[in-house]
Amino acid sequence: MHYQPIIDFIRSLYPGKETIPLHEPYFGGNEKKYVLDCIETNYVSSVGKYVDRFEEMIRDFTGAKYATATVNGTAALHIALKLAGVQPGDLVITQPLTFIATCNAITYCGAEPVFVDIDAETLGMSPDSLESWLEENVDMVDKGLEGLETLHSILSQPSQPFLSIHKATRRHISACVPMHTFGHPFKIDRIVDICNRYHIPVVEDAAESIGSYFKGQHTGTFGKLGILSFNGNKTITTGGGGMILTDDDELGPLAKHITTTAKKPHPWKFEHDMIGYNYRLPNINAALGCAQMEILPDILKNKRETARKYQEFFKKIDDIEFISEPSDSISNYWLNAILLKDYEERDQFLDYAYSQKVMCRPAWTLMNKLPMFKLCLNPRLTISEEISSKIINIPSSYNNKRY
Ligand SMILES: Cc1ncc(COP(=O)(O)O)c(C=O)c1O
Image 1 (spheres, rainbow, N blue to C red):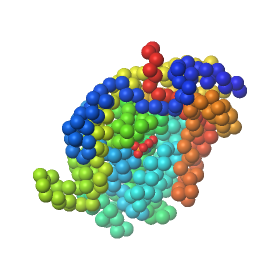
Image 2 (cartoon, rainbow, N blue to C red):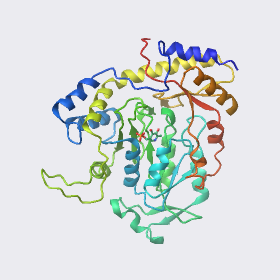
Image 3 (tube, rainbow, N blue to C red):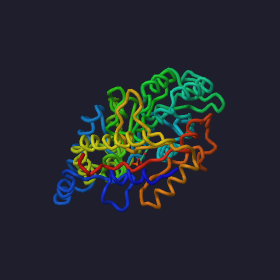
Image 4 (cartoon, rainbow, N blue to C red):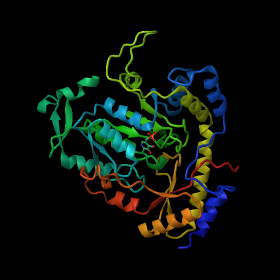
């Protein structure tokens, strides 16, 4: 295939740049002003007004009842999983096509991932794969049996009569972590319905999907808990940062408490009532976040316009399929993606794009292929294998060129 027209088109979207990054931050608002305010007032660290303001802006934007800012999305996931009740030795269901952070956070809890396949339309967890795996592999047991009663006591989870136990290993399946890949919403309503039937809490990895909606509701707000990331490569950034979202009146305040070293509020006493984490987002990062939230609607509009242009362009190119937002969804199009014919074509295209200084990249290596996770349960991952062999991300930054 002749790749030059594709490179030329990408260059026409981002004119005047020698190297075109995959995704760079855009600071078009009050970023400097707010960061300078932190420096001038000395409030750069764990105290200051911007964290509260940033959390409030995220609550307003997403509709979540509680939002707790953290140092990064991985820390947010770690704590969200703990709050969901994940304990050492448990199994946690996730998808193989995700960034390593999803599986790392599961491992930080002492649990182990189980991989179920993705859906070809959404690139997120397939409800059918999830349901059939649960049907074949799960025993619902009374919580009092098998010594499992203590599992949830640490975080005083509301009592639930049954737990899902993996038939072959007798391990508790204590959470499900689906992910909104590249910002495209997956069928979260069905995933939540299925998990509810099995009493498995959903922790929604919405790290990539701020500004993405499924059936009109913001991603990250369907599960028991959800998380966002504000890493430098995301739609908006705080340098590094994350957010825990929940509507749960017990878990919301607990998320704040546990990420701020579990210190009991007092003007001068240092008393801590449980093992906590120093995961609070510094004020100076939150200042950046407030400024970014102010321009988020413009960024989303701009990125969706770029996606529309890509979509139109790739209609004319044989053997390449542009990944469009799934049905019932509005996508932030964090990273635009295309499917090439096969992995040979994919690698040839990547080689050529790099030689032309246009930063494209393949999807992450599937989690079940990594040495740490290759022994985890991973039934029938046909769609994940197929898609990961031929998908690439193409430059998707905010486009400074006015439309
Ligand atoms: C799917 C997914 N989960 C979790 C994370 C972790 O976020 P962070 O890099 O902020 O720790 C990221 C992004 O980096 C991600 O893409």
